[in-house]
Image (cartoon, rainbow, N blue to C red):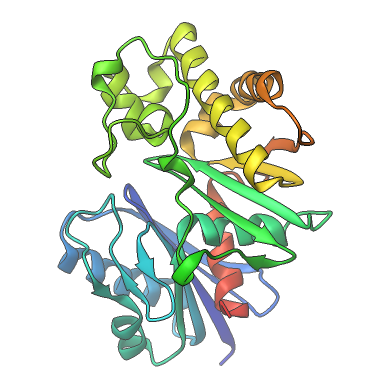
Length: 285
């Protein structure tokens, strides 16, 4: 019996699970819609993990999930899964599978995956996801940056000088009235424009790109990353034209600091899942 590692991407829209060998080669994978209830969600994770393990011994499990959370104790309260509050996920998974379980904010995990798969191993890499919500993870010299009290910086909850045809519809799920996430995330776009991102017309994409560009300007000024990588369904759906437009806005308004490289994720929709497999193999300390 060989030893394998499990990666879990526990998203607000879908769950993904994969098993890899010790070198990172993916052996099995599966996907499911996110159940609404906590009980069903936990049972789904258990079943998916068992499925991809395929009877082999699990050495460790790594997981990516939305914040906020306590990564050291593995207690999670993902914002976009309302029934998941103060869930002791580490305790639950370790009791079920008898192996170490590591969990962190999905954007931290995705950032680590992007960094590990980067050809140049950029010293300062900022990963941003635009999907159901908006978040980011910063990798400094191979390690996840953590803030005060081990907190996760919430880059989607900055305020910007924005453009929006329907300012009365801007409302972030955190409760604040002026977050960037409320303008450019999947949920934000649905609320502001009344439709999903894939149905936006060019003028609406221009607004979203402008707002993203202003956010990139702030992040480039404050963090001074070498590289910014964008992933998630909104970014990947908008494609190179969307990113190029946003970068143009960033460059136009950026002063005093160097302009970072900006690109789409090379891992596509698998960034958090690949990162979770790395976390399973390397841990989080």
